[in-house]
Each structure stands twice: as C-alpha cells, then as structure tokens.
Length: 326
Image (cartoon, rainbow, N blue to C red; front, side, top):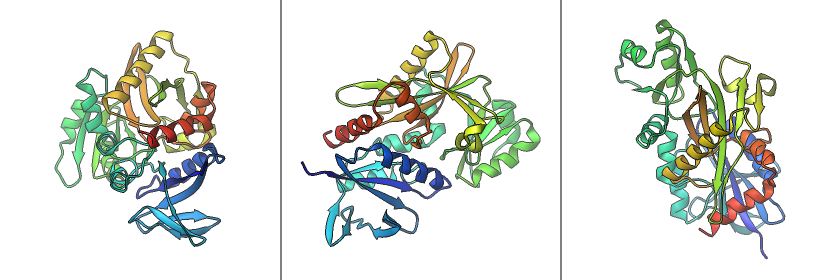
C-alpha cells in the first residue's frame, strides 16, 4: 500500500512560532513513518516552505503541493501544530477545506470561536459550564479601569484574548498596575481579556474522538514554582511540577472528564483537544479550550497518553485515518 503524504504544519504569525516548532519536532517523532511520508511545512508571513535537510522547498498554494526530485507531491493530510494564527483561528482550516485536504483539528467556526477566549467561555457559560468572571477590552476603544477592577476584583489576570503559551499575560494585584498590564497584552492581540483570579489547583484534561471511540485522557495537575503558570513555567522543566494523574478525588476527576467531553461536543471539536481548569474547593472552572495543544515530548498530551498506557504512534494513526475517512 502506498504511503500517504502528511504535512506537519508549524510556524505561524505570532510569538508562538518558537513553541510551534518544538511541537512539530514532537509530532514528527510520534507519527508512524512505516505508514506515512512526513514533510515539515513551515508557514510564516513571508513564506510557505517544506524544510528538508535544511533546504526549503516552496509550497504551491494552488493545490497544496511541492516539487521534490522532479516529482509532484500533493499532501494527503495536514497535521496542524501552529499555536496561534493562522493555524488555531480557522484561517488555515478554511484554506484546507477549499483544497479538500483533511486535517487534524476542528473546522473553521470552532477554531475561530475557541481562539477567542472571551467569546468561547461566554458561549459555554450558557450551557451551565462554570467559567471565571471576565471583561473584554479592545485596542483604540475607551475602557473604564475602575469598572474593570470592580467587576473582576484583585488580583486578576490580564491576557491577550487571542493567543496562548502565556505570552503577554500578567497577574495584577492592584489598580495602579492594571493599565500597564493591558498595554502589555495589546502587543499580542487587538483584544484583551481581564479575568477574575480564582485561587486553587490547576489541572488539564485531554480528549480525542474517532468514529469508533471517545478517549478521555488522565488529568494532569500543574504546580508552578512561579507565581502562576507563565511562559517560563510552561517551557522550563525545573519551574513546574506536573503530576499525572492529578491528586484529586474520584468525584472531581469524573466531573472534570464529563465537562471535558461535554465541551468537546458542544463546540464540535475534532482531533486531540486539551481543556484547562482551576479547582476551587469542590468546584472546577473552565479556563481555556486548546484545539492545537502543545506536542513536545514533555507536553501534557504526550504525558497523558503515556499515563493512559496508549501507544502514541497508534493514537496519531487513529486521528489521521479518522479525518481522512470522515
């Protein structure tokens, strides 16, 4: 049987490009090369290129293909691991849909909605899913600092509404620092979300679905040695302790897994998704839905797959084949 050609798409137009490259390296090691030909495909504002042996081969966007050794190679599938635009916000998904190329993540509407933290959380709140109180402000539009402080309280978190990997995020403890934090977040996004601080245990839960089964992965507990789970803590092993499965009650474990599955279905997610929570007492609050979660060998999802005693190559094969035969 002829191997399918898989483009592992990384890069992007935001500060998360460096994280995306690490995820691509992980995914390239996870996908079964006995079954698939793998092509690392870098997207930046300047170029779309396949990077092989330090050579860059231009991608023909008219049919999502390359010319390699005088052969015309069309990609049969795209594994998207761009964290941020255009791979997490629906832009790339729209292009691939036009090209009739199956891919690893959700469709355009779901990607656009989940990329907008404020809109996504308020949508989910309508279905009884508990989320933190938040306020949205837009660049070049007036906002009332006193009103924000009264609504969200202190401390609060200020973060880009569209983005991830904790770029541009601040924990603000008093009114005097609020505007500075908002301006910092505006460097990453035209919209900024100010969110109520909830003190508790941070956990994260992965899930994927195929036509045959739903797999809810073990929950990971996250203990940051920094004041919160910032960029340094996320990508510096000595700055964080990650425990899988999380040290929480069976009742909370089941409740969080149920919320994860419900959220996945409400949003019409596809592929592997990771949902982050904070636990306060016996209540869990949804923080964020990640439709292109990090995939470095030490990222949460690979840890959770290992804890579930699943073969990571088989998991990726399931996801690829399910999308191709959808």
